[in-house]
Image 1 (cartoon, rainbow, N blue to C red):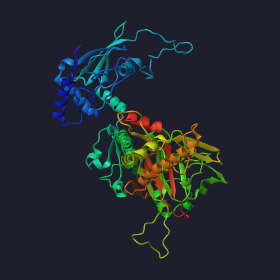
Image 2 (image 1 turned 90 degrees about the horizontal axis):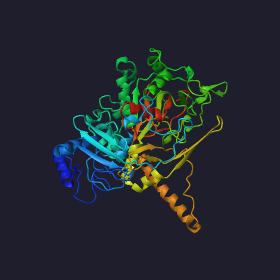
Image 3 (image 1 turned 180 degrees about the vertical axis):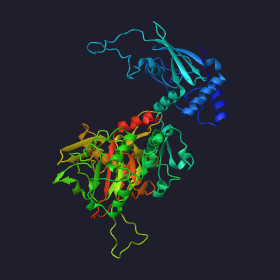
Image 4 (image 1 turned 60 degrees about the horizontal axis):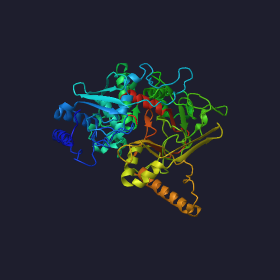
Length: 572
């Protein structure tokens, strides 16, 4: 067996840096290594399950470049053997940046090719019971080889009985698994400000999430510069390109958490003519009626592109509709539910009023909140003229404008400005509730405002989801008191004080105009909002004979994640 010395690996790293301009990785001769095993360089421990430390490999491309450098400098080390399952200390070796136990368990032969379930799990074929534990020797001799020609690793294991069939692991797969294990936010996220206008639209299929801020309505409406703008007809009318457009839609939604689709049909028979303004009547006649596609059908079509079917919620089983004058959804005084006529749809929500709404994510009171909200503007609110007949040009008129904010960008900003506040909001569970006495709903769920990927090389992994709605959040309880009751009041006061300060720091970021995208949605504008990432809000508006009407549906998080994975996108 040939070992790799520290000098050899440092030589490879110097060679790689000279070619790639990559100077962030160094490997000292002794002490703590950036690319190492706990006991030795690039090995794996004798205790089963104890794994690797693989910091320093900052990206898949870097990892592939290192493989090339290592093999160029020391071609005689491309094949190695090692025994795991024993407790002996082992020499330095070159091997993949993942535990060999993990790779051996991921052998494709151990998964059923039709169901993709594991077929190596022992159980009694009659009653399904697991077998009693055994003390047989699980020590295995492992050999692995990196083949630059095939761009993959080959792993072969041998126990006391027989050799296993070699299993191949593509470098791309190895790299993606190493990234997930490392859980470094820099591997998954980048900021909009770091990209130029040309770079933004050239990110590859496995693109990072782009955390955005400083967006304006003109930014997202300009077809020459907007990264999130689509035309409805381009998405659904071109049958020859439908699959490619769906892939692009999924990619943009994954990257930005927000999509604007213009020209969406608004024709619907769920709104009586007497509550339609003239502009709405004209628009519905031009958008939808000529193609015989209704607003409901268009919403479901978009939902099917990012998921599979609408999510059943307390607001109905299909398309819902909100209005400042929701009485026209009733039939003989009884609620008929959503815009599709489904029954038992709740209207116990402030979205059915005309007041402003603070930034929030939807359905924080569900164990798993929806993944995406499909939000179609059918009829905007009308503006009541000022007393003198017109408004001053400098006067801002609230008329139900929509507000959006990237929660991942806000969380990143909070971590930079106030790590203690980030820690509290990422570790303190908050409880949320929804009660609808008329329809019999009582929903409650608990979770932190900021959920991150656990573990990894840093204290905090990438942000996984945001759960925030102060209107539905219940009062917080501190940790249960200890037996030292004399200090409980002090501990409670400290808990509430620190949590209030952390929440104030979060609110301070949410109120910044640089973080908020304000859009005056027009008929046919449909917004897809990644509900566990982007927050949304609304300006106040005045009620009138012609109410503000929004229609939409929800898509489940599991369905959206499934579509993202099928499209080859990273899902945390």
